[in-house]
Image 1 (cartoon, rainbow, N blue to C red):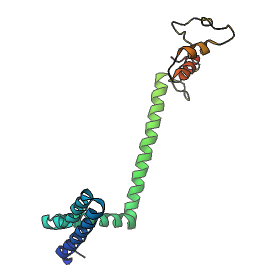
Image 2 (tube, helix red, strand yellow; image 1 turned 180 degrees about the vertical axis):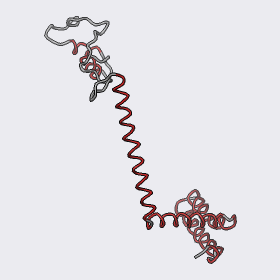
Image 3 (cartoon, helix red, strand yellow; image 1 turned 90 degrees about the horizontal axis):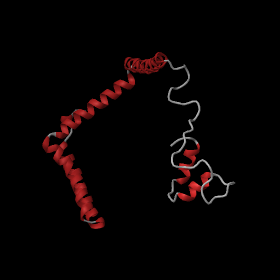
Image 4 (tube, rainbow, N blue to C red; image 1 turned 45 degrees about the vertical axis):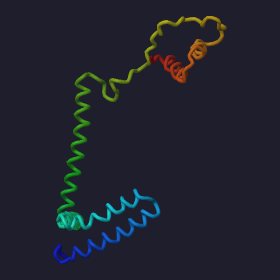
Length: 167
């Protein structure tokens, strides 16, 4: 069926009239804003017919449907999709191989990342005593004193990070 075989003006007018009836019902039940919104949607079919946009939409829809049906039922197109997939796989694999080659050229050992240290570095925290805090018994760790002095919500996290040597 072609575009010219369909009586578009009566079809668009009927859809618009039905939409305007629904907009009146929406106006009465849900208010003016809802009614105006439905009326705006209802006027679009007649506007598309009068501006010629309906024929453009028909052409776009027919082209998309033709493309999809030729894609689904054509084995040559499926072989093109398979070749595209192979190209993507080759591209990704070559990226991994190139990254490995660059790491080896920098002198890194294979299998280990240059960013991950082997052991955490313990750095002394400035401004703190090595021994127990003032007014604290010698048996309790210094972490309890730091927790007691910090009133914010992140003091527990800060203590854990300090114990791990992360400042």
